Image (cartoon, rainbow, N blue to C red; front, side):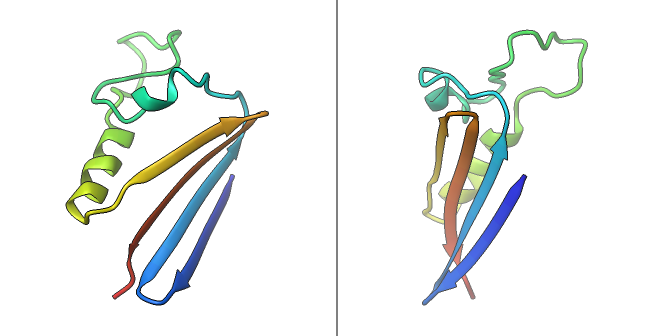
Length: 85
């Protein structure tokens, strides 16, 4: 897991990178949907309800920002910016 933060002018740019299974391209837009789980093997009796990334997206939208995700060759990267006040 890699976490990077860089401050430029009035914004903090955050990058979270993880090595592991690549998320299929068709799943990427769904990751931020409420209750979505990309791992279909996770049933209802297991931990997690699929709200984490939805909450992150909602908070960022309140700050007029967006979160971006890429997943290629076993590397998944999430990036976003926030006002650095």
